[in-house]
Length: 235
Ligand SMILES: Nc1ncnc2c1ncn2[C@@H]1O[C@H](COP(=O)(O)OP(=O)(O)O)[C@@H](O)[C@H]1O
Ligand SMILES: [Mg+2]
Image (cartoon, rainbow, N blue to C red; front, side):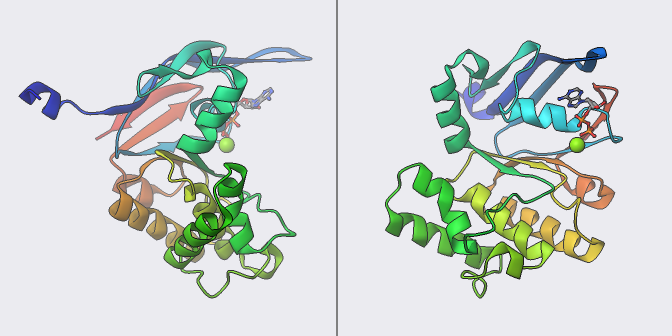
């Protein structure tokens, strides 16, 4: 290995020329305009910006939950939107973890079962899935709540379960869209602290949409989206 390759940052995800237009009954709505973004391995990026500026639309495209109108997303050099539907589903399940404002836990299952679910869907043996879910729930501070159902947990606890679930298959990238949008400020601090710990423990790469300025400044970079463009980038 030569010194140049040692020094080069490893680009995990590169988005090039991403535009998005929604076609509605009232005509086209241009939401994202030729965005370029590179996410390095281990990097933490905060996305900030006013409501309606296009943050969620961008998260959905980076997470392959939606397709851009133009542009490409390369994950470790692989052109994601050129993949077939089954391959893309497999990629998303294996490589990405998602946390949304509303946790979207399954109400009839326990915390442990919710966290295990992606591993079972990925056909991991039940014993492996249980052990991993148990470990993650301990890590997010819910070792004593594993058998509780979402309705028996507080909002912050539910979001911790959602974070544990997002990590059960050891994703390479965590995508979080306003993960504390539904929580009070003290509980939000705990969630941000948990994200800090996960980065310290695993050097987990993450893109987090947040309105919390203090948390944003702890990240490696802060991107401000305005009217579907990356307006400023600090650090
Ligand atoms: N499926 C859709 N169809 C039409 N317009 C949409 C759709 N999704 C989002 N938009 C519009 O795109 C803009 C950006 O939305 P969004 O990405 O959710 O913003 P943010 O997350 O920054 O609040 C908004 O004007 C919104 O109304
Ligand atoms: Mg949003």
